[in-house]
Length: 458
Image (cartoon, rainbow, N blue to C red; front, side, top):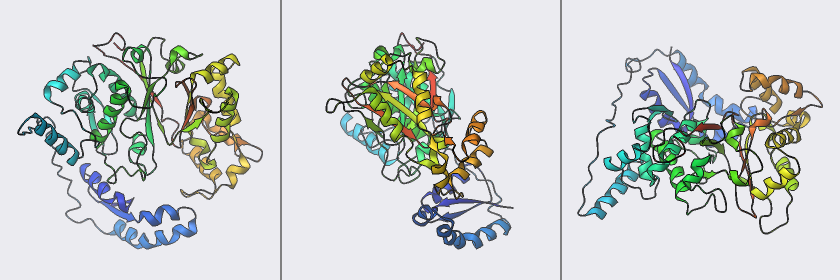
């Protein structure tokens, strides 16, 4: 019996291509008009006409015998990945322009000029790590391209990264390709989600990553090209493109370089973030996380602020959607002056996480009164369903069961550790609250290893 796969009109051709690439015969697809489907999810009554319009086709697709064509496994023609491309021009500048035109027209570049990835430059990039060029780091969503060290090196060259940066790029890709990181959502969602990349340890200082004023801005080669190398790697290996299968409706903030910076360990009152995650002092690490548009907290050089006032703003602004309370992910970047004041007040990173966890809980009555789509009438029903199917971690399930009753308070994260707290930024500065309405496993920290051109990360 054939299976039926639902998709929206915009994703239909890409879904067909993905099924074909995976050699899955008999997958019949039904496209739901996105302009109607997404709005109609608010209530069963609004969604009913959309479902009624396809129900007969769905039944027919399920019971109609497979055709001879549908029973044949797809004969996918694999592109030769190791063949070099020769581009000729009347002079170097002409050839350079033709390379850039070719890469952009082929959806291999991001719209900015690239460095042509010649075999010589790729070889130099690979020499910066002891990791084998053929090592497979994982499969990159949404099309599950195989990410090897060599493929990532090609993209690092294109981004203009120095070879010394390459082990940091590889560690970040280890994080993105971890099975717990929700890369498909970040790459393809209609929401404007953007990865965050944060470097810890001595390699951040050795490579001159910016952790202070302008940390998210231009002018710092390490921040800019490491972020861009990751963008290009995910674009090319994940085989994603705007309006094809990257459906971010307004694009993604910092889409060329991501939010890439280092933690200011020297000015933090606490241990490095990586140490709080179980790594040794002196280890160099990269943390990858996900975010929507960050909230800017504090007055900088313009308005007065207090450290407790900034934390109060986090508490006030964090529970911004009561039906997502159970699955939020927060990355809080405190500017050094604020972190210093909090340290003087007696806060540790752990006690601050616990404070935020307790003070951001949402009353059960508010959660129960919030209507939600996704097949549930109330947000509390959605949370209960996610307890039952394991999306809320088993070790935290009882906490939520106890909260889902009158008088209860529902946490907005699954545990205090899901407030990830870093110290970085200018002085005077602004603090940043990044939030992500998705799985609480969407934050991965990986150790930098195999470096050959730096003292750190070996």
